[in-house]
Amino acid sequence: MSAEPDATTKLFFREAIVRALGEEMRRDEGLVLMGQDIGAFGGPYREFDGLHARFGSGRVRDMPVAEGAMVGVGAGYAAAGGRALVSITYMDFLMLALDPLVNYAAKLRYKTGGQLHAPLVVKTTAGAKGQGVAHSQCIEAWMMGVPGLKVVAPSTPADAYGLLKSALREDGPVLYIDHKRLFPMAGHVPVSESCVPLGVARVERAGGDVTLVGHSWMMVPVLAAADRLETEGISCEVIDLRTLAPLDTAALCASAGRTGALVTVEEGQLTCGVGAEIAFRVHEAVPGIRAARVGAAPAPVSSNPVLEAAVVPDADRIVAAVCRLLRGKP
View 1 (tube, rainbow, N blue to C red):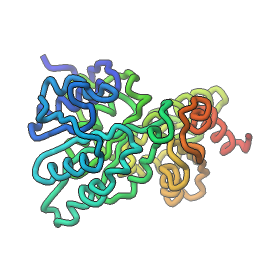
View 2 (view 1 turned 90 degrees about the vertical axis):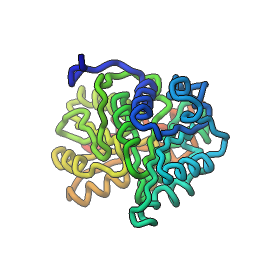
View 3 (view 1 turned 30 degrees about the horizontal axis):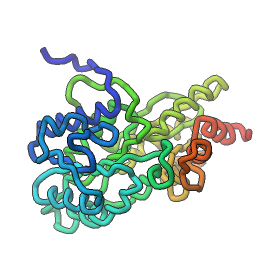
View 4 (view 1 turned 180 degrees about the horizontal axis):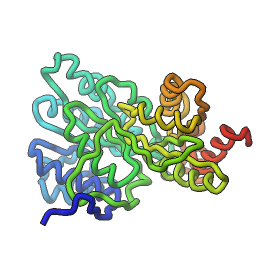
């Protein structure tokens, strides 16, 4: 008997990734996974657990510590007619692979007049969790301006599953960003196979006074801030971006047009950040919009827990930003 259309099962974030990969590898025999420690070990956060045993070392390939070579091989394999997912353990090391990702994979369709494509997913893990300056950065804003490259950042197990399945069916490259603090989180995922379309934001919570926008792990403090603000009589509409490139500008403008105020939240830097792009796009479409941005402090992320907390945004800072914007209060 087939599952009911709305039936769900509870999975951890990492389990949702494993399920999506397993289903897509079964559907497409040309899909190959490449990364460090993704084979018998099951991945740095166990997000590849069991796939090596199911599909073998030919399709779940442990690679050397050479991120540029990994993405280059994956892009070349994809361009030759295959399909690849390359795992970069920490987003910080994505910098080593920018040339094959940006200058080859993202431009291949344009270079060849549409004759060649690079169906490549680069999966990488971002965010602060006690691992210091070179293992904690969120640089997704760097990648949003690359023509030909799509960027997704799920915040729930359901979106981790559905967005990854959609990314693995794209003709061009997709940067899929998860967050190390999300892997142990659990949530409801559809029982039936399903995809979440890229480029569509979700209204997580309806409200009338201010629009709060976040993505990935930042949705946790955003929702906590919305709960606290509700007790102070401030109704927050909360939007989960889900996809950073292309941005769902229509959904953002529609919400900000209703509330008249916009606060963006990101774990990355404010300078040239995700929030800066959103705020200006909304400002162009919604004249007179009041806007504020919340992001990381302009400092490296320390492995010291006190200093790390001083850099990364939290619910307190989001609440303060909303109150300043709406009430002029510190």
